[in-house]
Image (cartoon, rainbow, N blue to C red; front, side, top):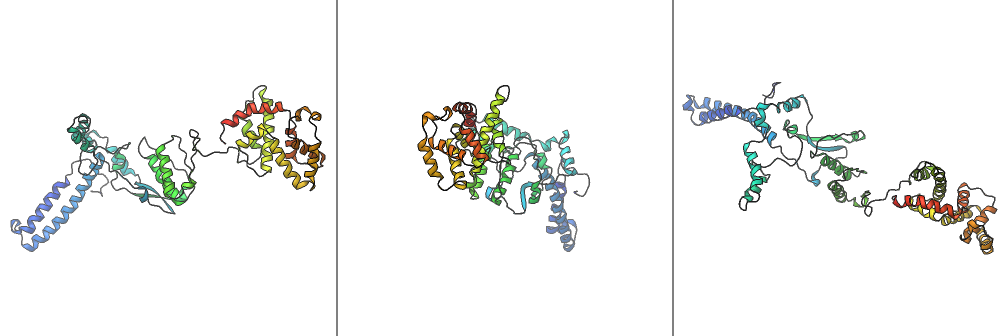
Length: 417
């Protein structure tokens, strides 16, 4: 039957009749050869042949019956997490089959009106679903309603699996096999399409599980915020002994979220100031202030990088409020590398000689040591662009700092640090 180009599986299993006749005749031939007017030797040979024919026809009947059963009661495929196969060169995708023209024809056959009795659940199934609701509140019958909902081999009226989609898409091929993909193909893109509750997330969990156990770096973006997927990823990381490498990033839960440093990686140092200043308004009179804020943040970023520290929002916010510590730290490092060995004594002398009344208005109230460092550096014949920027920022009037803090400060507060 399977050798013919045209097949019909949504029909009565007529092979059962020939199977029954073959087995019955074989039984008579072996037990009562005289009833068929055959010698015993001939009867035994005929019975053996009939048994083979009966088994062949029975196998064909079973194929039809299994195909129709899967149309109405799609088998559930489950695999425990610890039993998911793992390979270093292959990726397990689950069970399935390669779609061909044969499956397209089988799927088209399922929409014909005359075969709906083989595709749709029968009358008893619909009765069981109605009684589940009707008997739910009845004291005695509620137990029977519960039994009707149990998915077990002994319950022919069990409900369909709690998955979406169309069962016929899998039922058109009863002989599904394990599907593997070569690891080398992961460099390409993979598109998974399907309606709600057909297993897209379960497939993602299957792939993530294998990648975690293989020791790969796994990054999961989940726009839906599926808590079940999050728990599964963490459970697999813990099961693989990689819980310490698990990081969660979620803006809605900052107390447990990993921190993302949006200005920590760059190809040019000016990108740090650009990313921060671009979030400020640039219309009208705000354009000039935006440029001023960009220059001030760029000075801080360059100094941090020169000191071997990675810029982040917390440091930028700190030095916008008070740039003196950064200036003094960088000045000491610079003088240690380029100035005379007694520079500290010279700075101490300048510090003791400072009079508050003789200071310019912009420097009054500032740290005296910072002022002494500035004067000492100005007396040196050394050029350093980072230091020049820090000195110029240090000499700004306090009102400039207030303007930056009032505008850029709140931006730093709401940004991740």
